[in-house]
Image 1 (cartoon, rainbow, N blue to C red):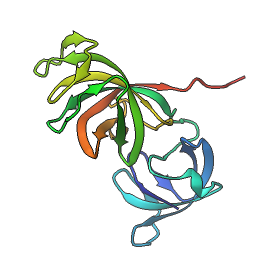
Image 2: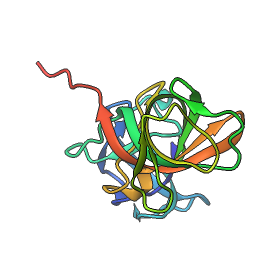
Image 3: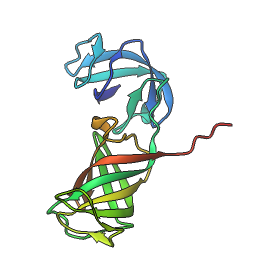
Length: 189
């Protein structure tokens, strides 16, 4: 059973879904409200419980995404984001800094793998290429490498899976949107 918040599309009993990032096909056994009332379908914005057959429950957890098998979401091994650092930054963000990446129900450790550019907060234009660090109230383009593949999308493609927050030491230090996603190379023969 998976506790889920519908972000897009529809889910209904009997439907075949692809569970990502586990990359396992499962069948929807039941769709229920949190009160346990069965419903025919879950729609975007609905908070429902989804019962699945054909999957090990260990493959389910925060950050799991159900998608159509014909249109799989490719889990990201690296992502770029446009972020704004907050007043709560105590230690500057540097390349190599470890953060907790939050997106929808996902929370995973990630490394800042690049600080591509500092942006002018008023215009959004590049003010400085490859700054050494980010401190309070700065806007920047950064790259992150999560500790495991994560299901995110570019904000311009799918808003619900494209918003991120970065936390360090229990504090939210930056908010932003995903601008690019790099999936693992497919291993097709």
